[in-house]
Image 1: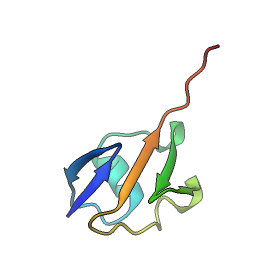
Image 2: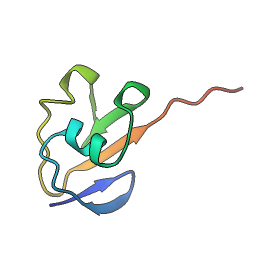
Image 3: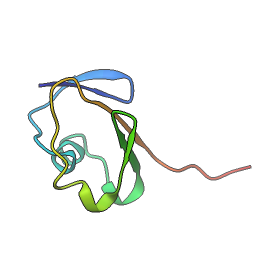
Length: 65
């Protein structure tokens, strides 16, 4: 299925957010995630189902000033 990940279209076989992160080699402990504009808590990554056309933002916090 196709989803939007950080503004680009990707093809994935992942059914959950956790599977997508593993597939994309993203460490779930170091990111914040939004699905279709809604924050997704880390506790829901494994149960959060994905659907074709979903828009995901997966961001790493940055330090600095």
